[in-house]
Length: 316
Ligand SMILES: [Fe+2]
Image (cartoon, rainbow, N blue to C red; front, side, top):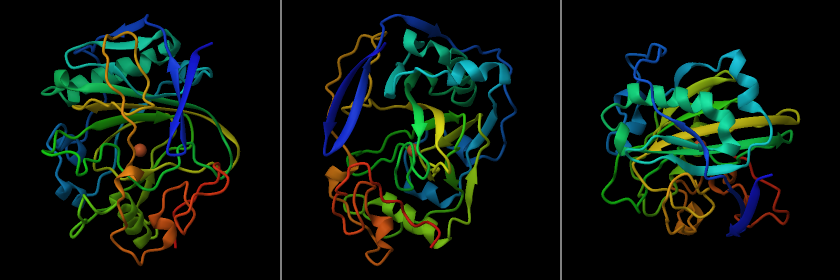
């Protein structure tokens, strides 16, 4: 059984697994046979470039990289993996290292390593890779990871100068993420004052979610830091395995992230979340459900029961 440490701040609760310092080591195979990549994807065109809000004006659909083969699925979804948030499994210049408790992800990490070498050859050795594993029951009507419409890797006011954008591979066995394949325009917003995720909610609701797109279950997809998305709610009680590999130039030192004992590093972990920034909605007249955090009711007060979540009305 994996040892699990619990911690929390601002009413949020995290579990951080204590993992083995031995496991699987993986190198990319430059000769691997890979799916044909689309020639016209803005995600592939902007891999590893410096953050620029203008890129939100180009609609982004994740790149489909093929389905996990049938023979690999049982291992990938086998229950028992510890919940793992943004754990580094590759450092700049290193191989990929998977602690023993996560060895069942070997096929996936090899596949992503092979793809990454082909897709991001210029910055391959510059980037970290962070692994997130979320596995467990999802209750009907509830998201495994409740959130507004958002992107992974938003570079707000803290990032001056801006750095290279991240890109993220994900796969799930069910309940695929909703992506909103439409342009987003943030003219007039100030990153030091406005919550861009609330405005993403607002612009998605403005189209009544007309541009929502889902990949098929088991499809490996690639998105970038401008790809707006949100988890999908379960219609019936479901068991779900969801895996994310993020390639980043930055250190992810947020308190709650998992530590990988197969590397020697000692980062000072910092409590940090978007709530702490005091950002407000740019459009104060938007529907109240679009401009509160999930743990708040529509007046902005915390829900009395910490399991209650507000969902944005994206199809008004
Ligand atoms: Fe996300």
